[in-house]
Image 1: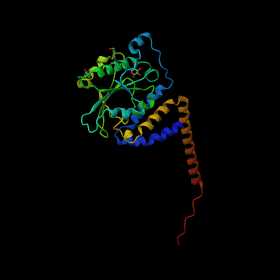
Image 2 (image 1 turned 45 degrees about the vertical axis):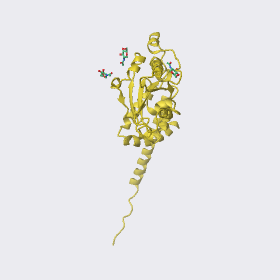
Image 3 (image 1 turned 90 degrees about the horizontal axis):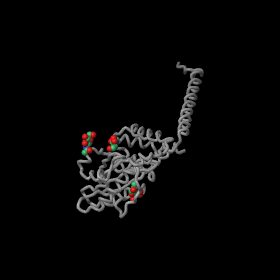
Image 4 (image 1 turned 60 degrees about the vertical axis):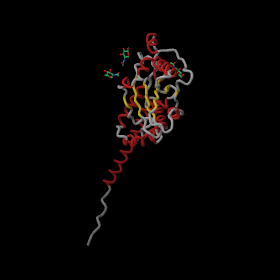
Length: 270
Ligand SMILES: *[C@@H]1O[C@H](CO)[C@@H](O)[C@H](O)[C@H]1NC(C)=O
Ligand SMILES: *[C@@H]1O[C@H](CO)[C@@H](O)[C@H](O)[C@H]1NC(C)=O
Ligand SMILES: *[C@@H]1O[C@H](CO)[C@@H](O)[C@H](O)[C@H]1NC(C)=O
């Protein structure tokens, strides 16, 4: 049931993706590789050495220096800081993180560095600092699926009031070595030279998926497909191919009977 719903929902998507000039196959393939790989994956237990490299104490950020984005609030939150009629883009930095489920425990140190950066920025009065937010993919799997974003990446949004397009640049961070200084260093636009500009069919603002409000249904579809165990997936595939075989054999049989039937008597013209 889940599978068929997802397939139904996915079909119009192919059309939108094609309109965007993207190979939808590539995007799907990347997604599928992702969730085929996730079947049977268990959160790893970090060794003490990894714990030192990737782990950190969890400390909530106080005083509104950092917002946690959810499926329900992200858009409103990002736009909340944008004055009406503004013509200079306002920056939001969003760090995509996760815990055991989506990041295998490898994100804590980077997340903690990001949190500290948010506190430092909030205390700054002279320099222009961006708004800071986190997405925890363990808590927000649908949001992460609908943006097609993975833990351990920093997304920089340049926002103008809606409905202007929104530029997004992103980078994967080095989870073992990133420090608050690295994050703060990205204030310099030159340090962001290697960020990639997001041009994806899953772009949260500019894509047709987003414009037609399909990103969230799609996020649900991907999320639930990823939960189908391997055996059920194989079972579904074999059921589909059996049905196709049966149909083909029936067609074949019908053709054979038509061919064997005596030809209709030709009309006699006088
Ligand atoms: C980062 O801040 C968020 C929001 O306050 C908090 O939920 C999270 O536990 C913090 N993470 C770390 C590693 O301190
Ligand atoms: C991440 O940083 C560590 C320590 O500096 C380094 O050894 C490693 O090669 C880096 N990884 C990547 C992918 O750059
Ligand atoms: C960007 O990447 C190139 C090649 O990997 C590297 O030499 C350069 O230092 C990077 N620039 C920044 C600002 O990180």
